[in-house]
Each structure stands twice: as C-alpha cells, then as structure tokens.
Length: 183
Picture (tube, one colour):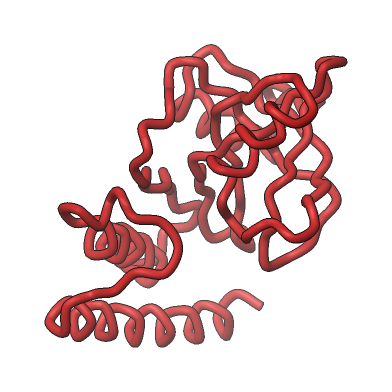
C-alpha cells in the first residue's frame, strides 16, 4: 500500500494532489493484470462484466499518473475488488506496467458519461500550462453534447475535426519542446 509520509518532499505533492481529488482517501498501489481480448481503456464495461463472471465488486476512483516530473493527473477509473478483497486493475492499456496508483473515491459514481482528468502542473513552465489547457480543450471537443455519451471510435463533424486537428498539432509541438527541455 502506498501511504505518502508527511515531510517527505518526494511524496508530499502526490498526497496533496490526492487530497484535492478525493478528500479523506488514501492512494493504494495495486497490481495491473489486464484481461486478454478486452478493449483498451474501457474499464467501465470490463469491470462490471468481471463482477458478474467472478464475483467481487467494482470500486470507483482515480488512476494517478505522473508525466516525467512535469504534471500529475487523476484519470476517472474503476478496478475490480475480487471476492477475497484484493484490488486489481484489469483494464488493458497501450502500455504495460506492473502496478498502478489507485485512489478510491466513494463519493463518485459512473453515469455512462466521460469524465475529464484532473491535472496539476509540477513545474512552473508556460508550455506545461498550455499543454494541460489543451488537454482540457481536447476533452471538451470530444465530449460536447451527445459525444459525452459515446464510447470507442467517434464520428466527428468536419468543423470539429478541423478544430481538433489544430489542437493535436499544437499538442505535438509542445510535447517535442518539453521532451527536449526536460530529458
């Protein structure tokens, strides 16, 4: 279990961020064991299926990610609590890792709509600030109106595609600058 210790500057920012996201909750390091053959990033369909098939229950909260000391973010997520009480992340992702940092959030429930990530910069850098702003803008474009209820591949109107491509181009430019600056 991950428990940030007060006074440890290397972890204080994680604990502070987690308190901001889900007050009175403690982040937990849990194993990542993706189910083969399941779609990537579709936790809210995969976990209820697992509960029906194997028992246990669904636990809603946030996956906590950090990008190279530049920013930290919380991704709305759900994991499986097996019948013995163990938490496991079963959702396939494009990358493989051994564990994730999961922050339970009993105050939240999934309502079939996309939820934007919560992000905080870790450095005072205008490019990072702009990058995080564009991440929010990208979410807004892809989840405007009825799009918020759609999952998987989206079909966007031409004007939205044009706006989205402009944002993606700037995001890529920012990523390249940030990689050069911070690697």
